[in-house]
Length: 84
Image 1 (cartoon, rainbow, N blue to C red):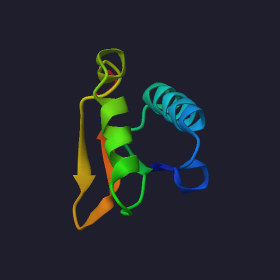
Image 2 (image 1 turned 180 degrees about the vertical axis):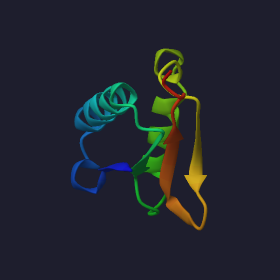
Image 3 (image 1 turned 180 degrees about the horizontal axis):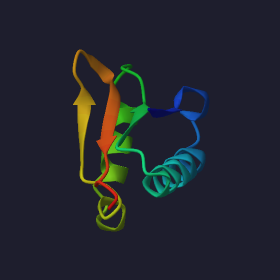
Image 4 (image 1 turned 60 degrees about the vertical axis):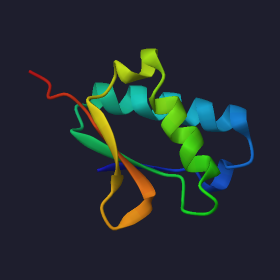
């Protein structure tokens, strides 16, 4: 499973958005069934930013659904549509 850890860039909004965008586009084209994004637990502010990014209309077209990882609220699992 591909993984994106946002801890090293958590302070820079522009880098976060760029990293998320590049990661999701690459993952959707690679044929992965699911990937994980690691915003960490912390105050939850970074996770809210990630979820807001994922809920944008043009980004939602890339994936099927997203969820918090069972047993670890510091991870977001993004599931993609099956490739034919």
